[in-house]
Image 1 (cartoon, rainbow, N blue to C red):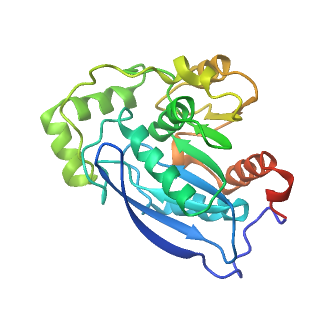
Image 2: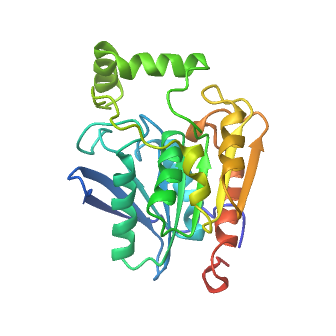
Length: 265
């Protein structure tokens, strides 16, 4: 298998889905498919304010296609999905709805790649629901309510105040709940140990302006084998910081965790 995308290959087929979560929220999702019957799928879970419409997300999804079909989606409260964002709590139901639909479509090996908020959701989902063949956490927080960077202090102002939520709704197409978590869910570092025996890869940039590298090491240290930690020199935060070269590495890692007959050629 070539490490780079061959752009002479026909564009993937796009299938739009409207999913309903276990708590009744509608989720807007798109499945990118290559020709032929495939049993492996990869789910891309965006960070807060992210969307499958983003060119960054689309580029990541297309680079992952050699390993399996790829489903991207908007979390609740984001863009075309219903409901309101809870910024990482109830979103595990969104991810479970996506994984369930892929199972219904016949995929038997499903990997999840989450970014920032989506990384926290991916870790919690794998610990609580299980049923996936690999989990990748990119730029994820290890704990809640972190305010140790300027970016996170601004984010908390945005989601914690009426004016900030109005700004997010108008300019970022994100509707955030005004309700506080009750109860507060377990933190990613508290549940990472429950992901095993599913393989976990923790990826973080040493130039992340939201969460320092200590968040990645906390998740990795709390997890049980099989696990890996990649600290990427010069990398910033989440989807926008992911290079094609890093996506190829992620694709290889996922492919190596598939059964031999499922590994891409």
